[in-house]
Image (cartoon, rainbow, N blue to C red; front, side, top):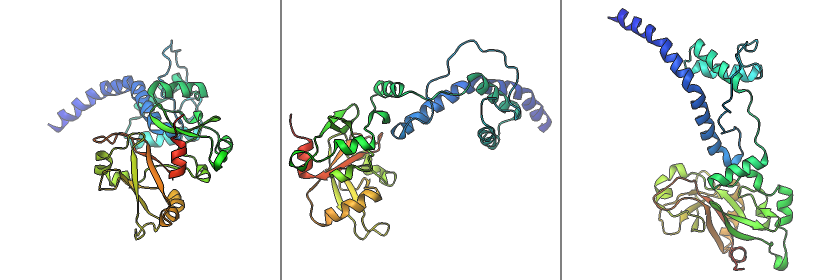
Length: 286
């Protein structure tokens, strides 16, 4: 019986490998799209566009190391180790190398392409935000000591909008203007609250100090406005700046700038915190 099973497996293996090779381009393309979606907020590290389908010239040879001729030896060795770890056969790896050889290296997207892609899916590309230098100028104090800025809806989120452009919600320097903007941390440990709470752009949130938190004496928990359970925490760096303000009795406003409604946790909440006077200024009517 075992010999029959082994013989049948050996007979079927070429067909299985051929089918895997046939599906590989589609799998790589889907994986690249998924990768780009997850990394969009931190910039595009891979090109989610499918390779162009034109006439494929006959392959003459691969590189001397058995990988695509255009790929560096170190990168191919890393891929090769990963493929072997996945249990891919030598013939399957050869087909992958041939596919990569035909496809060629992916060219990085231009800024215009990144913006077009972001618009098409309703997001904001990183290249659309102000540079740190321009951001510092845009948030400089104006009349009354407040920056010339507003909190406005841009596609799927609220952004601090200035005459010079949009402030990056992951800015590392906007706190100098009294604007603390961040992605909520620890939501994986508080999924129920993240799902039940309302975190749509513009939803007000609550901050609560946890001075006895064993992991961080500056800990600041974040709650949806009407939820008793915390959804997550202010990141450590921002908590270090905000905790003294909360302890000192500052009148702070916390608002969701990107997130999902109650019953959904599709988007990890993005939060903006500032003093009430600044919040009223940012949300003033025209």
